[in-house]
Length: 214
Image 1: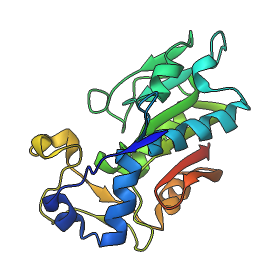
Image 2 (image 1 turned 90 degrees about the horizontal axis):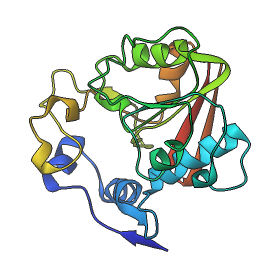
Image 3 (image 1 turned 180 degrees about the horizontal axis):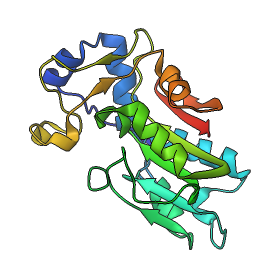
């Protein structure tokens, strides 16, 4: 069972220049949640992509002794809670960790995840390069971003500051949006050096997760 909450507010809708259809599916991405575990649709997409990468048929929360090395950059309700049970799970939140230059050796992790974080990073291509650098061969980088599917991506350089999260977060630089991703989001991954891209969806266009292979 899922519950629905409107999460967008008028100022953000205007800054993002969203039409009514886009408002609806972004609201669903962020505000439609599992009544049991609290995971929203983007979290469900992230969890689905992780399960596919790991070859799982059981829920993530049933994980236990798997030796997979996981780097979680920012966390995602429900998904991070499940992965935190793994013995080799590490959580490091952006912006406390610099995604442009992370303090880990090459290939230190089997799985790197982040959820609705890349749009806040100054150089998303470099952040993806860095995520892939610390990912082992045969590993994966799996993430979500808010995608407006009917337009191309744009930088918010030279535009007024815009903030995600909640109206009360306005002014917090870690919530400032640097890139608004559109239908060409996949080009950022290829430009960063990904060898392959897989898109997982639980509801289009509301909830997609992207899996990159270094």
